[in-house]
Structure formats: C-alpha cells, structure tokens
Length: 352
Image 1 (cartoon, rainbow, N blue to C red):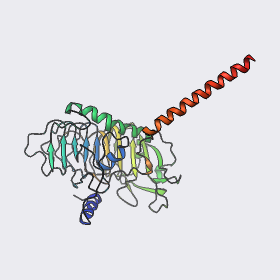
Image 2 (image 1 turned 90 degrees about the vertical axis):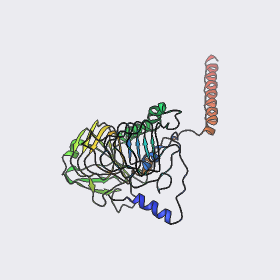
Image 3 (image 1 turned 180 degrees about the horizontal axis):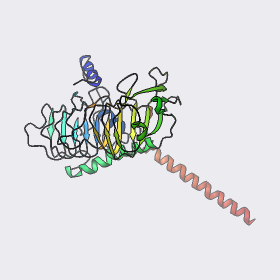
Image 4 (image 1 turned 120 degrees about the horizontal axis):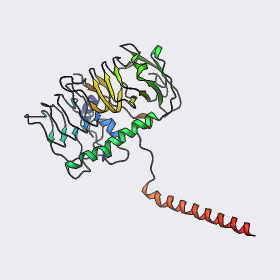
C-alpha cells in the first residue's frame, strides 16, 4: 500500500533533528474541531467496519468490527507527525464502543472504551492497548457516550450545518464537468450547491476542472465547500485535473442518510447523518454516522491527506474572553442607566 506524504514528512522531521514539538490540546477546547479534522482520517459516530486499510488515525464513537483492517497504517503519531496535534487522553486509534473484529493491525496507541476481542493479539503492531477506558473528561467508561456526543459529534453536526448555510457564490456546470471557484477575495471559500442527481449524471471517470480561486495556478487560492443534497449511489470517480487528492475541498452531504461510493474519490467527505459505504479509495477524511456495511461487504481504503480547514472554515465562532465579561457587563449596565435617565427626562418634559 502507498505511504502518504504525512508519514514522509514525519520521517524527514525526525532525521532533521528530532520529533516536532507540539502543545497537547484538550477535547473540551472550544476550537477543537480543526484539530480533530487534521488528526483523524475517519471520524465516525457509530460503527466502523472495514476490510481495507486506513492510512491515518481513527476516532470511532461506536464499535469497531467485524471486518479485519489495518488502522493508522502510516504510523501517524499525533503531536509528533507534522500537521497533527496531540489531544490529552486520546490516542491514534480510539474506539468508544467495543472491538469485535478478528483482529485490527494498528500503529500507535489504541484506546477502547468497551471490551476487546479475545483473539491474541487483537492489535498487533501497536505501541499500547487499553480496554474499558474512560475518555476524558469522563470519570468512568460509562461516561464515554456523553463525552463523544458533547465534545466531538455536536461539533461535527454543527460544522455540517454551518457549511450548508453558506451562500452559494460559485456555479457548477455539469455538462462541462467545470467548477470555477468565484474569486471572491482572500480568506473566502468557494461555495457550490449541487444535487446528488447532478453528480449521478456525470461520467464514470469524472475529471472535474477548476478555475478561478480553485485553479492550480491561482494567485490567491481558496478552499471549496461543495454542499450536496440527496442520498444514493455514486459510481463516478471524482478526481481533479491537477492532482488526485485535494485537501482544500470538502463535500458536505448535508442531509444524506445513505451514501454508497463505488469509485475513487479525491477529497474529504462530510456526511454526519449517513451510512457511508465505499468500494474504492477515498483520499481525505470520511466523517459519517456509520462506515462500511456488514461482512463480507467491507469498505474501501481511506487515504491521507485530511481536509486543511483553510479560510477559517472549521473555526468556532468567537466568544468573549473571561476578562472582557466584566467590561461587557459594565457597558450593558451603563446603557440601562442612560436609557432610564432618558425616559425620566422625557416624562418630566411632558409634565411641564
């Protein structure tokens, strides 16, 4: 299997003078979303089942199984591999439910909230393995479901809704397989609205052409959000004219409940309400309600790189700093005083 540029960059960094130092984040950090997306090749709310390899780390809210598959095959070490951040209390393979596969070869630290298959060894190649693990900030493994929903999945669903609410500024031309990203200014992503039916009408080996701020030679490149409505099967290979993997593209299947992809895909997929099943490689994140069918169906390989979260697409909305809250309260109090005094003066004038 191919090795990704992420693993190669980590190797270069190590040879060039040691591991890359990184500050560990906490899962409760308000702006944890871009870290999650950069760190984890797959983020799944429910069950993850695959008979194919996943190059990067995984974050699974449900069970892992029953298909045997290699996880974190590229030996990404969070906080050490370039472009990643360690998260306190989390590893490279995180399973909030049970591990039920025959085995899952894996690299890095494996943390399982429930039980582990009795096969020996269930995770060959790992640095460490723990079962019945309480993911922080939970006190016991019984808190894991709430931990995942409150600190991880709520941010994922909010992210999808936020992308879906963006105003379209770029137009997809299905007949020419042409997606010119509007040059709307630095720091502003191109936003497309398409239907699954439009995608299904394209050829089976679709090479999407990009222009504007999405062109390979764009002076001011941008990220792109492709909002898709509808559920169903896609047999098209969504590749791009200048590369086979696009970390600046994210396909947001905002209301899909079932999504089957039967050809190679060159960018990240966000489908928080969908059962996603693939029979071909995905080059990017897969973020879904569940991943893979039941054995022996399996699912296709998941490759790096992950979505780059450019143009501040993944940032949490700003909140007042704790130190600014007294100032805000004082300002509101002053406004109330001015309002009351104004009303009192108008009343006095009326009486006169």
